[in-house]
Image (cartoon, rainbow, N blue to C red):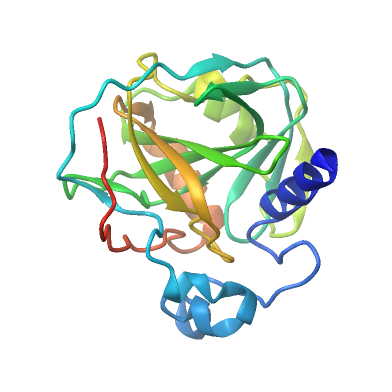
Amino acid sequence: MKKSVLALTAGMILTTGTVLAGGGSHWGYTGSQGPEHWGDLDKAYAVCKSGVNQSPVNLTGLVEAELPAIAFSYGATATEVINNGHTIQANFAKGSSIKVDGMDFQLLQCHFHSPSENTIEGESFPMEGHCVHATTEGELAVVAIMYKLGAASPAIAALWEKMPEKAGEKNTLSAKVNGIDIMPKNKDYYRFNGSLTTPPCTEGVRWLVLKENATISRQQLDRFVKVMHHPNNRPVQPVNARLIVK
């Protein structure tokens, strides 16, 4: 049973940006299929409109807390890069994980948004990475990385080298990439409860937003933006009664 739950979760997450595993309406970031319409496109997406713990958010009103360190156990397990028409996504084989709340979360994939989806005290960033993890029971955790312009990222360069230009294409990575290398050295983080930022906007996701920024070059950002053709960020959602801790 546990394996089937993880398989379903992985299938849903790994195909995000196209359709859900098992079906779902097409969605996008502009026009009648844009974020403001997601909740009306398909009954399966209803929580995009009705949910009260939606992501992304503006991280503000931060509450001090003793947050334990995220226990990263990553290896060079990235296997392929996909352009699903909504993002560029690196898929990872088994062997990389984090431990949060005493549970092991397997790294499934890392994907990117420009500009950033979450904001910090109202500040938007040129790009944001989301590394999506799941437990065998289907619990989800996302480690988010904010990127500023600066030095080029060698790990991003390795992914971009295999970035498909057309939606629906994927390329195998010739050199395996370690997910830890797309992150900053300091792994202190903000935490809040939220959702997937794409349909079906599933709630109950642990969000772990790294405080320190990583860097990418202007050339790396421009390459991503050119391939995406338009911004691929969902606007920030109401925080409502949630606490954002630091």
